[in-house]
Image 1 (cartoon, one colour):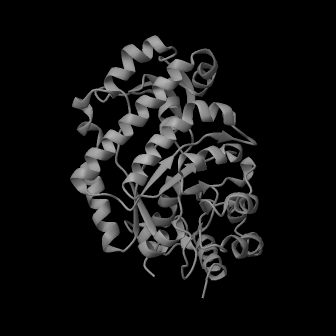
Image 2 (image 1 turned 180 degrees about the vertical axis):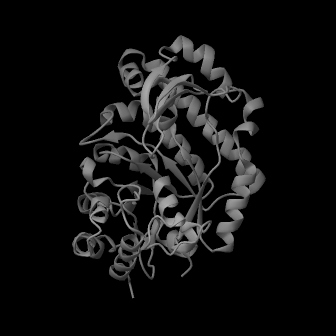
Amino acid sequence: MTGKERISNILAHKPTDRIGLFEHFWGDTHRAWTSGEDATSEIKPGEGFEDHFNYDLSACWCFNLCADLDFVPYVVAEDEDTVTVKDGNYATLRRHKKHDSTPEHIAFDIDCREKWDEMIKPKLTDPANYRRRINFEAYRNAKAYAASKERFFFWSGVNVFECMHPVCGHVEMLIAMLDDPEWMSDMTETFAKLTVELQKILFEEEGKPDGVWYYEDMGFKNAPFMSPAMYDKFIYPAHKHTCDYAHGLGLPVVMHSCGFVEPLLPGMIDAGIDALQVIEIKAGMDLLRIFKNHGDKIALIGGIDVRCLYSNDRAVIDAELEAKIPVVKQGYAYVLHSDHSIPKTVRYETYKYFIEKGLALGSHK
């Protein structure tokens, strides 16, 4: 089977020759595995990981949803290890200079509905900015390349939760769900409508992808950022709007979410997701439990504890894969993927072994 055929069947719970294959990596890992830093690596400089490992799918992130497209980010502070920058959402964030990490939230100018109405919403709802937000060339090239490799091709980008907190921060956003619910509903509706409008422009001009992949980190360790009731009130309508548009075009929807989001899954499934990725074990997620409770309704991508790969110990990797793959391959709706991005502490030869072992266990032949 081709990658496109395989992922199409997996998302539809139809028979395949084997489980699917995909992965995410930190930028540090790309550098280590292509520069000679990892002596075990067989990847040549400039060679894409998708080609080297023969992944079944690829994705293109081609929308810019930053509020002020004309704002030039500037450095607020800098030291040996970090740089603090103010961006086009009028947010001040500190990032580490020596390795990839989630930025530290320092300050957000948008801390009330009045500032949202004045400074942000007009920029997001101005049709004159729509085409400026789309990288047509990147999408066109990525789509054509995926087709040449017979891979399943996803449009990828953020959904509303991941649009909102860069504007006002997690704390203000979550408090406002209680204190100013109309503002939060307006934000989710604005971002959902903008996303669909941009997709309409792009897909009509450049052609549809094979599927839609949303990033939406709605959990932390052992809990989601909000209760299922709050999800249903604020986030569900936006998820349903964006999923309904994709389904109207015949496109399946994958949703990524780091953290513990299991309590939100019934709502996410009802909203229309066709697959969940990444199923983070150290946050409290459990691949086998989720497969048992929801595997008949959605495909699963991930859920293999990346800490097992940190060990670079094949016996540890064997135990993890042998406990999970023979179970989750049942039903033809699983894609092999770690539960988080692969760091450079994982040696190339370890990851290569992980793939070989996982796919052997995941064969349906």
